[in-house]
Amino acid sequence: MLAEGVRELAPEVLSIMRYDAILFDLDNTLYDYDAYWYERLLWALEPVVVSYPRLDAAMLARQAMEQRIYAREWEGFLRDVGVESGKALAVALQRYRANYYNRLRMYDHAIEALNALWGCWKLGLITNGPSWSQRPKIEQFALDTWMDVIVVSEEVGLAKPDPAIFHLALRQIAIPPERALFVGDSLEHDMHGAYAAGLDFAWMNPKGRALPSHEPPPVAIIIDLRELLDCVLPDR
Image (cartoon, rainbow, N blue to C red; front, side, top):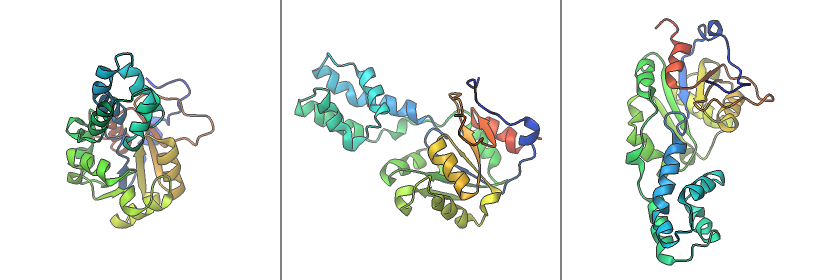
């Protein structure tokens, strides 16, 4: 159930949407990045709490997520909470940087949705982040099976919400912005960028967050990708 305050369009409005291309964000759109990140942090913290049993791994993991602590800030974050052991720090950093991607799983219904859309629309992926983190995810999910274009921000020197990264992707598949839909979870990066570039936007909102009153409405709000099919394939 969506949170109070979330605005949805009526089904009859959704049923007349027509596009030539559907582009997707990756993290928290095709898979649950937050759950993956939390599990990865807990794993990285195991050697720390063995040496420092006063520390709460779950609390530290949540704190690291709230502060957006990535590998380059990880050692400093641990030192700030009192971790001084060089061995514990080294193992924790090694674990944070290790290939954890084989544990990733796509959202329920994501493969079903991509299979249904593939061949009917041009499909694409636009993801922010470095190649070393995003490419292994793309390979783990075999996204090139469905995607006609894949754009990783570091590789092109552009990042969402810059409209230029959307235009770059669309040029590669020869689709104008007004004939494209972007599906993503971030209002700041995905929605603002898509609208600035002239695309429509569908909000992937599995946690039922309320849409702030100052934000423009998405053309659709979905809690899973199966609902996307109801938007673009009303007669299926």
